[in-house]
Amino acid sequence: MKITALLFWLGASIVLWVITPMVFVSINGALGLPVYIFGMFRLIGIIFVILGIIIALIASLTFMKFGKGTPAIIDPPKKLVIKGLYKRTRNPIYVAHLLIFLGLFIFWGHVMLFALFVIGFIGFHLYILKTEEPVLEKRYREDYLKYMKVVPRWLW
Image 1 (cartoon, helix red, strand yellow):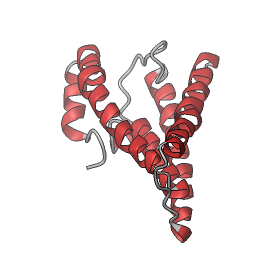
Image 2 (spheres, one colour):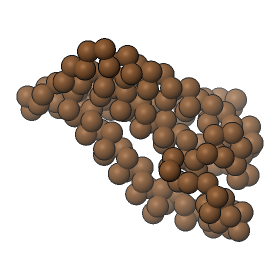
Image 3 (cartoon, helix red, strand yellow):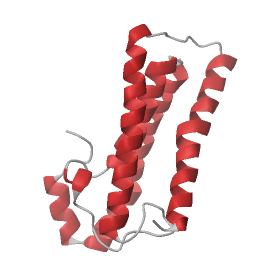
Image 4 (spheres, one colour):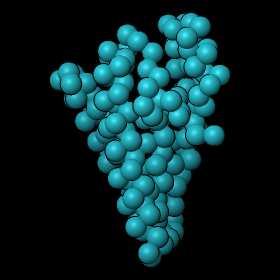
């Protein structure tokens, strides 16, 4: 793994999975919004977080191995990646982030963490539609158009 890719992955993970949720929890407290305790369901939250981290790691490693680049903007892939998790969804890393956000909400119960999940989904979706897909269509042309027809953007 390239050191720049590792640093990008670690930095992005800390910002997305630690700092951003902490900010949303702080906002939750500052606004006096409710916190829902889900009892035994908190285990599901932990499972979602762990699953999300594993998916993000596997997808990132697949991306680097087969794409000959990284998910980082500074080192984009040289090849279109359609192996592993990328056979099931075109965006497994974004799916992983959303799983983590949802897991954090289920575990801690702060309403703003659910808002983070919703805002994350909307933000990722718009970014994919407006920025990422047009760039990939331009870069990989027919190969990406065929891939789009076969593999869903999300999970369904």
